[in-house]
Length: 402
Image (tube, rainbow, N blue to C red; front, side, top):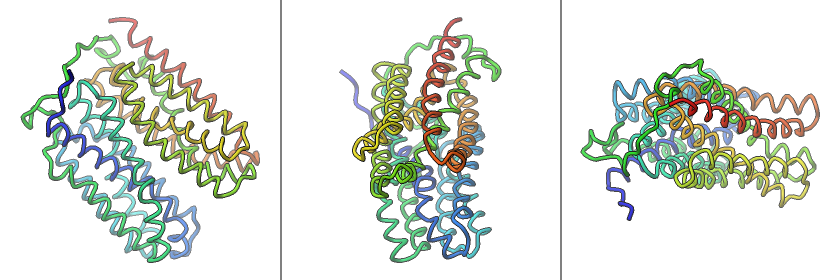
């Protein structure tokens, strides 16, 4: 019979769920709600305002490169406090912006806070607190990154339309504070022993591979893992184009909105499901299944013109969120060991984050040149197959010598 989680273990999951929601969900996933209103008020184009998201995404990925080192030096609790301060202060200050420069400066604070609160912190902490159910708790925490977009997009949109975009930023700041509260009041740490408890589940004997024992950034296992991760991060960016894709194939704007809503809901569901599958069947089996569902979604988007099938296909495509959000993290833990996780994952996250930001613009450029999103969808299918081969080879390279 499986042991139940104790209060401190439940507390650390709650805190990391809040960090993911604040650092990713409230910061990056709701940014698009402000583009139109802020551009109109500041007298500039939407492109200039949307650059705030580019700033936050880039700085989030860059900060993640140093987050593991900062956590080891100063502790998780101090890093969470710093992240909460930067996120909330930056968001509230956005409400006072009178020009683009000030808005950009505010988003620098938010981007750094996002990097401190985001993927590196969440996955690093949970990997040390859970020997068992690691996939499930990681999936649950990262599912919270999509929760604000599903729960609060309508509320924030109403606030922006009725009370103005500045009030919308104030409401976003309040919600960000609330999500940060658990990490500020609960005993969070990198290692559970420092707060008087043990990791959940029995420790498994790790097979020490040469890739883990003698890690090198030039090793075939790492290069293949990095390459696969980059194309998966790039694939995720197409989700922002789903409404535009619907219109481009003569569907209504409402159909495009339904496609995006379905994708965001499946974003949450797929992460929890991926974690459960990884716990029971291993990360690679979960990776193969989720990548297969993503491929099926891309096929549906490419060939179908039915609003219902397009919506279902968008939901299947959203399984790519679980692959990039959880699958890469669990793969790195297995391929390179927890002792190297703090070196490998931040580097992969940085490269992937930068390429994700560039891919969003590239997809739009391809449409401008070709007059269609079909080349983007074909490229997505190639990315899915290519990433599967790369991770398979990386797994083989990491395990061939013990």
